[in-house]
Image (cartoon, rainbow, N blue to C red):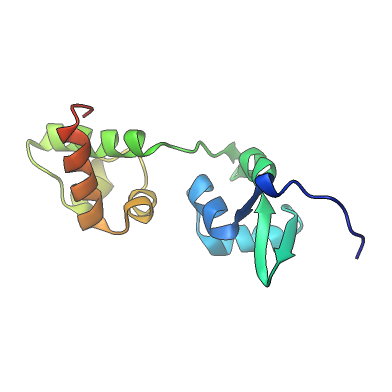
Length: 125
């Protein structure tokens, strides 16, 4: 396999790539296997290139990387509509961001609600 110089600042883990795209780690792994993403192994750990992930098209769309504030803002929007914090099923029905993307970012639904409370407490929601 030919060697080439790599900018280590452009490398991210497959897990980080999955979070950026709002998809599973398996999806990123599949893109690597199909040759849609280049990968580099360092110390037994696989990395992909951030610039390629940012340009990655999934389902014909470029995935927008949402900030924590955008995700929590959507949860707080649903809360305002309902007049109380939503449960996960209500968010799934009314939210504009996929439930799994929000939960993946904050751990689980309880983590989402806790982060939304803190976000709201900062006067941002």
